[in-house]
Length: 587
Image 1 (cartoon, rainbow, N blue to C red):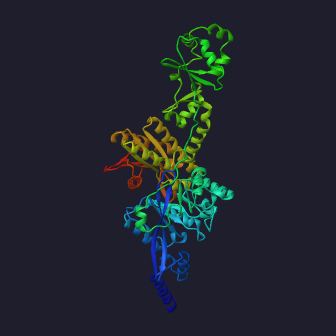
Image 2 (image 1 turned 135 degrees about the vertical axis):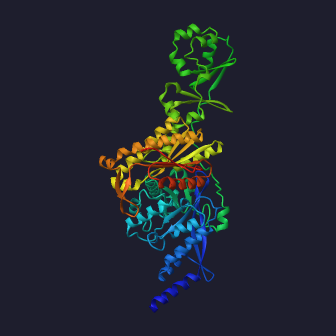
Image 3 (image 1 turned 45 degrees about the horizontal axis):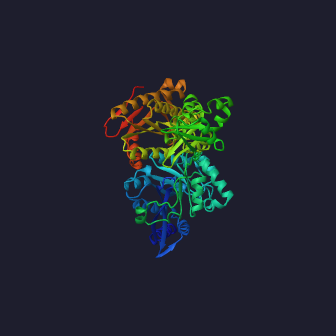
């Protein structure tokens, strides 16, 4: 008894003497030059002297005070993370404390709500310093926190105890994967570091998690991540050391290099211009071009321009015709032999619209686009179709990189770009959050393959809806069973009616994944988040509709709140912002 009292006294004395200094290190979205958020870190002083954080936690372990110290650090990190901070807050979490009373019993949830934060702005970042002994228990805890909207990340993948095995065990639960500074630092000069980062980046992408590259200090490593690894998120001293709260509040991203690699297209060929009077002889034109080695010239006859393919003219026009027309006025020959002298204005012009992927496919498949004209302030250039192939491949690679591997729908990065585009254009739009009800229970009861097929089915139905709406709807798959629709050009009433029809279509489409026996019963048996068996209703979908804006955090917060209302209703439901009514459909 006395020994326990002494230990408790020593623990309290230790915690009193440790001064915790909250710090925040920025995480940057480099391709867009903006903040993703901040990682909350702690620095320590004991009796006025700064002490290394690792040593402090080692000392805390000796006093059996790691849990209390960890909670204090988290509490202070949340207290100083004010409304003026931008983006997500990344909170370091020991896996063992995530599954224990020190972390659980709603403490972190209460802290988050108590500081006017929504859980969907908080990323629980699992540290690598201890082994996870019960992965199933950890998964259960993560599902519990994700049900409130928390995001989950894993720190320093491939180091300590955060092995690839743990990554595979947590597939489907991770939103972020941090790649360690040991690999990032010097990756531009190390072939093996580059190859390892490339593999880990691809693995992260394939499980639906976003990779964050830690420990970026040199510009050459940063450029490698951006241009070669196609990475978006970085953290390190190149941008900022861990900042005091006041510094973090005022922090703004400044990039000293080009944010995005130029998606260059070939410049094309500058044609030679031959200027003649309409009455001059055709032979004069033939003599003018006989020593020209380039393929194309532009023939100018007063106010009209004609494009001449010299290869085609030299090999396609017979000697008999050349002799026959040699002394004829050139305008007469041009008008008579239009196939050799098409008007320049009739040649397709390369516009930004034609550089979109689906248009580039049309160009490659059509005989009408063998040659394109590029017009700019400097004049005109001519570009042959085959020269666009490498550009098309780059565009396709970029699109695939930001698509969900299961549904091939655009992910959250493309969604944010689209929202920014609509906001900057001043256009009114709506954001609709779509979520499959009881999907985890279905996935557990029917198996992951059936779960994947259900998500694919939702993707197909939403893609079909997007096509029917003729460009007024954009569909995004942001991960798991969560989808987002952007709707523009709709009145409030029209958007609501279209979504109710879509809700009915989704509900009907999902019924095909249940067994006849379950359909007859009207429910299936699965496990809830506490692993208890219970009855779940069949195929229902929750939707939340909010007015669009440029503020992603606002949109996310409102959508999450409305989605909770929809999910609390039994059956498929649509909840609309500022409408005190839950809209439903008949089963």
